[in-house]
Amino acid sequence: MRRSGNVAFTSVLLALSAVFLVLTLGFDESSRVVPLSVAGSLSGLLLVQIVRDVREGRQATAPIPTDAPLEAAAVGWLLALGALILLFGMLLGPALFVSVYLRRKAAEGWLVTIGGGATTALVFWLVLTHAIGAPVSLGAVGALVGALLGIRT
Image (tube, rainbow, N blue to C red):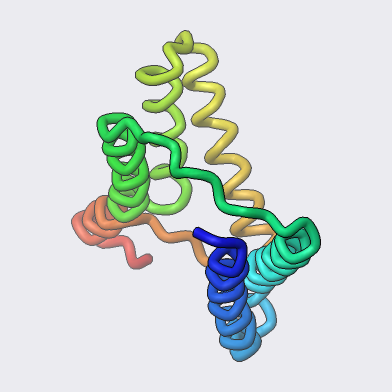
């Protein structure tokens, strides 16, 4: 890929980020805090990258050979995170993911594993409920348990 290809690709990403940024402005004030911060910082970083590519006349390097099994494993972990969030909600899902990852992939002990999961749940709870004020999803399992117990969520 030539330098113009790098700039073109980054420009397309910047345009998509700008569209996301504009669409986010239509959200109510409490709902747009996180998307605005993500889209704003992403747009800024992409703009800096375009300027650097143009100034330095960068050429794209040859693609690095990839290890397909490692990529498949990474995609699997990301899909597992999404599945855990859907099943157990935004507090327990990420906490379970971090705990399983620390125990299986990082080979950490039980103290670190449980501490990492608990810290993740605490941070998500603080950010979602106190900083943003967003309702916290209990996931499909939480909704099912709530329905079985007659608790409305």
